[in-house]
Length: 194
Image (cartoon, rainbow, N blue to C red):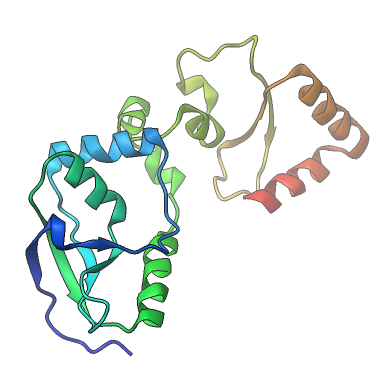
């Protein structure tokens, strides 16, 4: 059980920190570029979580990607919050820090400009699946066939659920499925995925 106390952020030399060999988190090149851009713009405003338990000293539990980028950028020190956990709890915290991230509220994200969202790392395909395609520029109409159905019970009540069909063959399969089973069936299938 966690003992309540003051959290203290300290600056630690990068060379003393040891990334956890078991850390399952990874980043794509694009994600790493986005994180690097953020660190250049704002600095390291989110401290790393590091163990100080005997025999586990300076093992990084949270912040591996920030550490890697800070090192590449020439940082000599990084902000750290120390915790004292045995190896089993250390690994659990690592997983929780990487898994318990929540999800986006797309209705609130709709208040941001598309270009602003893309600038911080959202992919165009991700935005296309969650926002009305009419708000996006440079959509190749010949490459994408889009089937839209109203989903009155979806979390985004007044929005359309957009299915991106990357080939005519997929478009035909979906159209046939709707023709054979009706719109209600496809709406139920979509809602299962949301």
